[in-house]
Length: 63
Image (cartoon, rainbow, N blue to C red; front, side, top):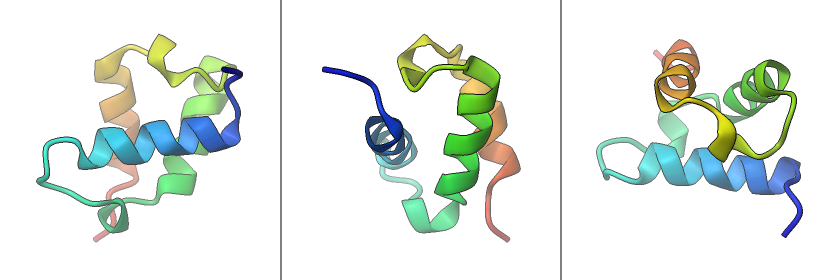
């Protein structure tokens, strides 16, 4: 399956909601996708270090 903006967005939403403690509404999902893509230069976010991904996500937590 090719990795696209849509698959990357789905990955981010799944990661954010996986533990049930947060939802996509708590974060700027588009911001996370954009920043992660710019850093990784791929839509396959599984290749991104988990701690780096969560560091990016934390910067897009909505107040």
